Every structure is written in C-alpha cells, then in structure tokens.
Image 1: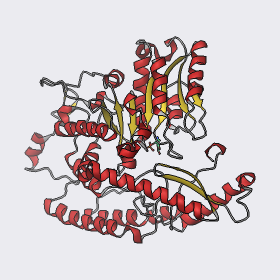
Image 2 (image 1 turned 120 degrees about the vertical axis):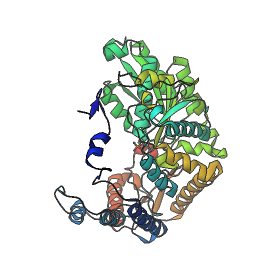
Image 3 (image 1 turned 90 degrees about the vertical axis):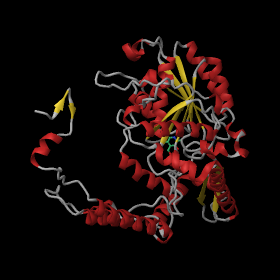
Image 4 (image 1 turned 180 degrees about the vertical axis):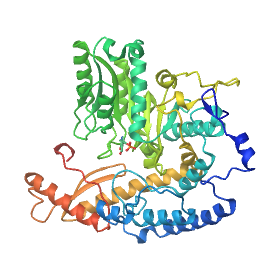
Length: 478
Ligand SMILES: Cc1ncc(COP(=O)(O)O)c(C=O)c1O
C-alpha cells in the first residue's frame, strides 16, 4: 500500500505509471480547451460588465420560478462537456441574479465588484495557495501581510499592527471579540472556560450595533444578558456618559467589563460614534477598545473626514470590510489588531502533524494562528490588486464621490414635497415617501407610513427598476 504515509495522502504516481504514462482524470481540461472556453468566458463577462445598466437590477423572480429555471436534475452519474457547463452557468447567473454592481442598486452595503477582483480571484484559485501556513503559500502569505499593512495605512492607523483577511464583517468582528476576551480574561480562561472569570464578563456597545454582537454573545457562551446596550444621543452616537456610568455600576456589582465597541459607520444610518471619547473611557477602565468599521471606516482616507474618525489610532482592534467600501468582490473582510500577539494567544495551536516552523531570522506569519480557519483561501489578492490599481488617491476620489452622491440624494429628497429626508451620514441617506397631506402629521401615522413605504419598495424592486434597503423608522433617528 503506497497511498498513505503518516496519515498524509501522496500522489499515487508509481501505481499509475505502471498502468499508463499519464493519469487520465475526468476533471482535467486540456490546455487548448481551457484557452478556448476561458476566452469565451472572458468575452461573456466583459460584455456583461459593459452592459450591466441595460439589465434590470433584479428579475424579481420568485424562489419557485428560480427553481424552475434551474430544474431539479438528480446528481449526474457521468460527466458533461465543460463548454456547455460554463455556458449554462453564465446564463443562469447573469440572467437571474440580483446585480449589486448595477448603478441602480442602492440597498445594503455590498459594493460594485471591481473587475480586477474577478481576475484576481481566477488567479488565486489557479494557484490555490493555502494561506494557512507560510510554508504552503510563501508569496500569498507575504501579499496578505502587505495587504493588511496597506489597509492599516489606508485608514491611518499604525501600519505595524497585525491582522488577517476573513470572510466579512461578522467574522472580522467575531475574530476581534475573542482576541479581546483572551487579552482581558484571567489566563485560566483557556482551561476553565467562563466559569472562573471572577465575575461575569460583560461588554458594551450602542444599540445601533450590528447583530454580530448578539451572535458573539450567544456563540461564545456569554449570553445576551452580558451585552450592555448603551443608548444613543440625539445624533445617534453612543452616549459616552451613560457608558461610563454603566461600567461603574457593573464594577460595583462585581461584574467584569472587558470590551467596548464603537461604530465607525453604523449599519443603518452610517453614524460614526465619538471614538476619542470611547477610547478615553476604555483607557480609564483598562478595557479593550474595538471599532466596528466594517462599512464606514474606509472614509477615514478622505482628508476632510479625518476629524470624524479621530480616535481610531487608539483602538485595540478594528473590523474593516474590503467587500463593502473598497469595492472587492465578496468575500473580503479584515481584522486589524494593534498587538497581533493577542490573535496568536487566542487562535494558535500546534498539532503534531504541523511542521510550519521556518529557518528565517524573522519568523514567518502562519495565518492559521491568527484566526478561525486552518486552510484558507487567498482573499487578499483581490484587495491587494485593487489598492494598487486605484491607489490611495483613486479611492479618495471614489469614496468622496459616493458620499457626494448620497448627499445629493438627501438634498433632492428634501426639495421634493412628498419625500421626507431623514438622515445623511457617509454614503447612507435615509428618506421616505410621505403622501401629500400626511407631512404635518407624519409622526402620528408612523405605522401607516412604514407599511406604505414597504409596499412601495417591494413594487419598485420586483419591477427591477431600483433596489433600496428597508429601514423601519425608529423614533430616535428622526
Ligand atoms: C457595521 C457593520 N458591521 C458588520 C456587518 C456584517 O458584515 P458581513 O455581512 O460582511 O458579515 C455589517 C454589514 O452590513 C455592517 O454594516
């Protein structure tokens, strides 16, 4: 038996060389065929990108209609020609998808994907680097390290901080959450779990915080009651006076505060908390300061917005999503950590079958020690390439224009007699339709207006004309 050695698969070359010179695998594609169908695919994709605005934003098909188009074929017993498969996959996807790269897609925060990102993903999949360990992906690891450094530089924090590319905002925040807990909990946490933390570990965020915080509370064993929801002020920023009071109350009651989360562009209205004030509170009480900048923090690159983001250099960790405002195709998130040793302390393990040490003077980063994944794809490539294609100035222009367009929408909504302009922060504008005669008494008719706007939105969306995000009006954001 030559298939296995110490638990590893080896290519059974010798066995096959006894039977044939070259293994004939059903999944191979010849060089000529790859070129022909590859060029065809590139033609299809470039036509799609060029004419995306002629398509509806979405076809509005129901799940049943989509299922009918897809069909219900059983798992194929035998293979099919690649060109037919690619052609069908292209038709299915290009003609039956919601196109978030469409100029009339205004919903949620996924950006239009930079075409260079699509090419980068093709290249990354071809090399198939496993960016879990340096030895398995020497160049990809170096590129990821440089990408992390550039992202830090981009938003204006110390490029010497460390970090890791992850799948998106949830993972970027969850990755940091656990690093914060390791840093602030007693060392016994690893052995004893939460039972021996000398008081319930509690953490603080404004009520505008994204739902990842509830996931963290539930998944990591704290429970929802460990979240201290701090009210927001008139501008929808975390009220830092109440934050301080709540921390003091918790300390008096024997709780163990360990983490405060500030938003740098909250998911609903794009508000940036007073990050400097939160940093000061964290310093006073020796708490980990995390910023959820998954959506908004790239705007810190714009010189005129530097003040709005003052305080980001104080953060112990930051979540930032290139697949949101850096125009990377899904998936690309990033966790930045001031002292990356906290990631290693949290995630590193050394199974006997890993031989990933290196002989270099400077120890290489093995990214499996920085986060949840062992085997990891090469997400950094698309971000690294887009950052170079546009350069910092290119991003300043794009992000600046996005903000200017959102501001223009707000101004237009303000001028319209039947639109109520509600909030404008970063690239997020909120407004609603208020029929003539209702404007004076809008507050009294909140339920009716919410239903009306929801219906209006659904009609517009199903028609494929435009795609907005629904945000039920809450009293505090008016
Ligand atoms: C501020 C913020 N945090 C976290 C997330 C979650 O990001 P993802 O959907 O990439 O997991 C979002 C998503 O919109 C967000 O806006």
